[in-house]
Length: 97
Image 1 (tube, helix red, strand yellow):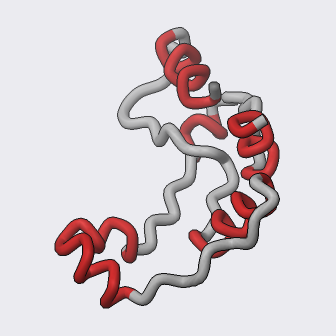
Image 2 (cartoon, one colour):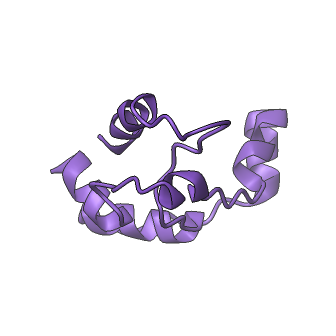
């Protein structure tokens, strides 16, 4: 909902210029995501997967999972976009509810 909402907001925001990161306002590490997802599903969080196993299974595509990318929505925040789901637990609750 927030991704579509941000696109609609961007189309109606004339002062917006340049790229816009369509991401949540509070980035989390993969470990935090796995824990939150496990909690939302009432299941234990998945065990860590060694990097070599990802590289073996996914080849070059594994780099996208292994590289750290802390993307933040600075432009949307600065221009006043209001997220419907600001936190991961709230977003997962809505998505999996």
